[in-house]
Amino acid sequence: MIKSAVLTNQIIVQAVNKKGTLADIAKLTSEHGINIEAMAGYVADGDTATLMLVTDDERRTVDLLKEHGYQSVHETKVIYIEIESKPGALKVISDKLADNDIDIKYNYGTTSSDARYSRMVLGTSDNEKAVVLFQKFTEE
Image (tube, rainbow, N blue to C red; front, side, top):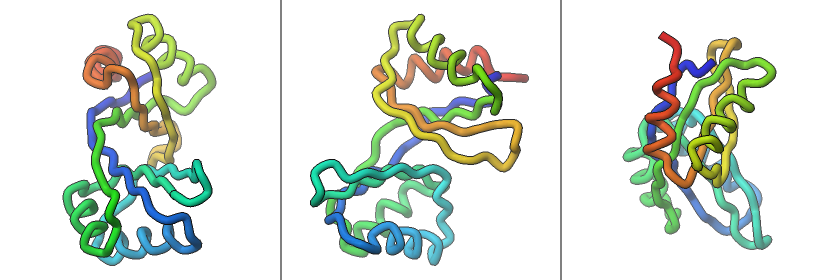
């Protein structure tokens, strides 16, 4: 059910909510050969956009965004997990977390190059404990 689970960095960018912000970030990363592997975004107060990114080169992404005027850029630890794409897969991982007293703070999904799997980014109350738990169940 669980193909892989790793602890990685997520980049959080907060910027003025205006048209073209995501397009600018996508252009910057693509022009520098950086792949955005997962992304979520939202506007909570109307004025500030928050983007959460997992890329294939966190350090270069952070440096690049700061060089191009994005002032509020920081990294947080998250779990990047690949699970089977079938009914009940989310139930299995959420049950494992609940059974081990680990709270899911947020999650978002992304695509996988293998249609049999889906990828998720999870922020939990104990990411390190959750990764160890998931790795016990990874497929060989």
